[in-house]
Length: 294
Image (cartoon, rainbow, N blue to C red; front, side, top):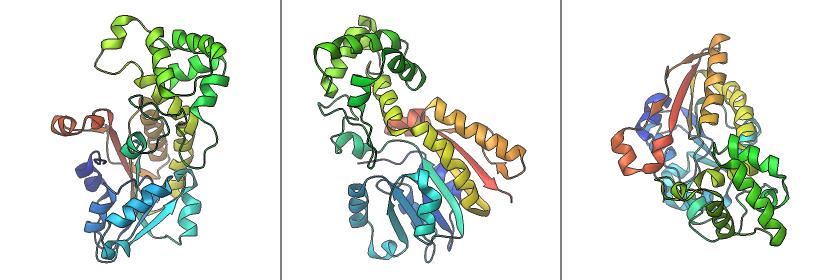
């Protein structure tokens, strides 16, 4: 259901070995964690965090009994990384992985409107979030909509899409993905509808980021991750958006300047052409890694 992005590179930079402990902040179906558990056996552990209980239940069934004994699963948001680690008495942490990509499960199974290819309610939140995409498109002002479409989606037609949403919602509330896709279609020029990237992609991305406060959460988790690591421990982050990558890059550079870390990736690591052909979502992935010095 979900192909792990940059798996070989994650293993290279996290460098798991027997007896070492790791945290996967977005474990999903264990695409990165299961290979880590292979490399840190017989007694190394992994704390896996995910916002969706259903995902954790599926993962637990899929993992062997032996690996399950070394896998600690926690439902929650990685913004609470420090608290979750403390509650699970998970210490001596040698590596932390943050894969900021959204799981295929959310697109295919969650029924929350993450995909513009299915007609579903406009929800788009992860577990525990109250704000929904429906509230945003029906209640936020035209300027507020334009700003998130422009900033989070880097959408060139942000203004015309925001304007049409505000016009349409006066006639009928926008409650489904199909309604929103049709509005976006009407708001953009004809040639824009036939590009390689679907014309609704950036708007759906922007709404998801806004609903889940993803950029603020990233800024808050990075210092927690650095603090949680043992000396010589490593932090690996995979981002899929230029704004995410910028946050990670600036945090790493400042931490290096202050003498806390060594940057292991002078430039972000990108997927090979071969991986992109096998897994198109890896096209926008960027991996950065640091090692804690003190």
